[in-house]
Length: 309
Ligand SMILES: NC(=O)c1ccc[n+]([C@@H]2O[C@H](COP(=O)([O-])OP(=O)(O)OC[C@H]3O[C@@H](n4cnc5c(N)ncnc54)[C@H](OP(=O)(O)O)[C@@H]3O)[C@@H](O)[C@H]2O)c1
Image (cartoon, rainbow, N blue to C red; front, side, top):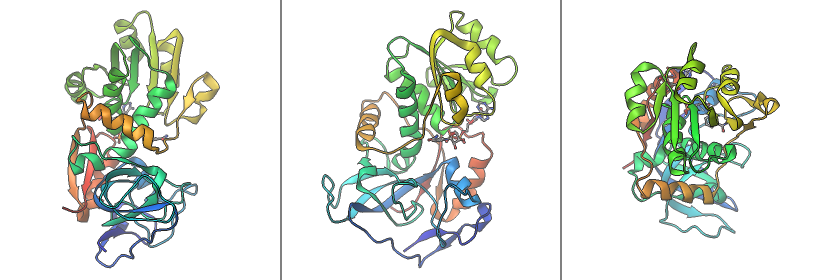
């Protein structure tokens, strides 16, 4: 099958297109998907670079996200049939042996959700990791009706969905950090932009003198002090990048796929409450270029990988 493979750890240059990659088999409890699209999440290039806690077997296929059509169903799988249109986030620890930058991907059946009807295949391929993370971190932080929410790194893959999902979960106001070129983009998503770095706390206090009810940190790198400084007395907070946040009363989220959350997310997209913004769509053969764009860390929305028609 056609796939992006790598046989050593390194930068985007180690990725190469193969037309003879081994097809992943389908074991009990697993489903094989004919992949239409995938995306780039920072974790994808971190794994290719080499992370001791996320080992791979060479030749390895990158990409954890996928949208596609169920092509084969393993023994014992219930609830999914050949021909179903699905999305999946296949991450380590769930027995995942194959990646999404390939014509076929095998994942545990419980890591699947239905493809939102309103999304194109490329948009759906960009949904799993970023969408689930945004939804789960906001739920973990306890966003409720009328809350003022602040999102650190609001313009990125997770961030641009988080600001919209926060509203859909009832937030009355959403404040988002970004560099100046992304401020208009955030206003278009009904978020109030502020510039990250020195002076952030003063900007947020000027917008919300009574304090912010919920803060979600999608960037790390020492923003915890700013989070604590802007929170209202009974405020809640969570991070997807800073495990130490639990020592300061926050929650740390490690995203995990499950059907119920995929269904809830899909309803938000299909109701028009949330839209997917794609910064770029790359052909499978250009996956290295897609990695390079992600590595600038200044994207706007998601980077999709178009795998097959
Ligand atoms: N724990 C988990 O389960 C989990 C799940 C998903 C992602 N993550 C992690 O979460 C992070 C974000 O993921 P992503 O997919 O959203 O990444 P991304 O799309 O690459 O994020 C890029 C965004 O970050 C913004 N940014 C860069 N530096 C910033 C700063 N100092 N302050 C505020 N914003 C800044 C950029 O805004 P400007 O262009 O305006 O600078 C850009 O819009 C990554 O580190 C990823 O590995 C963790």
